[in-house]
Image (cartoon, rainbow, N blue to C red):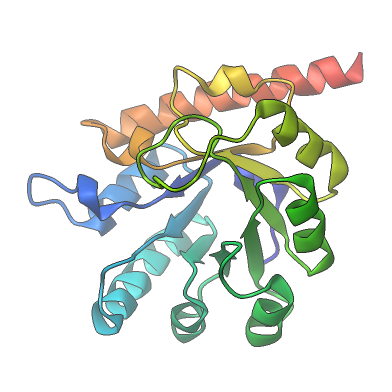
Length: 221
């Protein structure tokens, strides 16, 4: 699967810490997809390989049902075994060109980039898109400092590939990213901590599309 820029609009990153009331991660992912999530990244830090593989295969099927790309966070071997649509890697993980050598040319590779230098390197190494942040304070990655929005804009202007903003993003602050050049937003708790995942996802997508459409209009003036 090749990446479409529209796949970046509302990028849902899973977090099993928000599971409640007997729900499974598959249940939550399907609700997010019903609400309009345009890409799903499976992020697991604690699961053993057997359960990770089982879960990845199940969520891949759900994503296929909705025609949405399915990305594995960090774990290239799991992505290979379940034939995921791609992988997202951080700066401390495998280089994009090494991931490409393992996965092949028809897979999507995302790379985290926190400054222009990292962004340019990732693009040169063959990344299909970048995840840049943290754009706002976030509890999901305590060791990541906030990314100045001017630096985010520089990244977006410097590279030719899509950039998705991540980190502490919710429906109340999405519009603060307006004019920076992002192709969309990646969210975790804004979707998965919600009591009504489908409804919240719809609202997040509506606001994000509003921002992106306004940015297009302003760019055309």
